[in-house]
Image (spheres, rainbow, N blue to C red):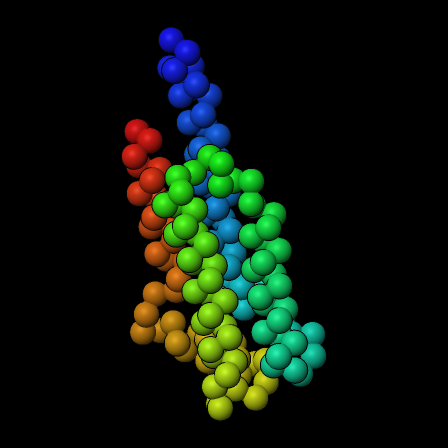
Length: 133
């Protein structure tokens, strides 16, 4: 009986954690991030740092959610965060990038031919959520 009660209590908490982490991944999706976070000067490096700082702050705000999701799911979320940061850093190293606006353009152009890292992370969360039912 106790196990059934724990399941009734934990399932809503697990779903809420998955919802919050899905929101995190949507917010760090480059398409969303680059529209929401505007550069404050003409330095491409300052803009890169601003974007990464925003991703890290959002992540830190949701650290406690890891206790409600599987280790594999948490790993997928961290991998998504790292891949997004890597995408931004690599784009900023391009010879084509000389301004924050060009950085935005290069990142978004890169995603035309492939999915954003968030797509994979969200798919993992959805799979885990389906397993609850």
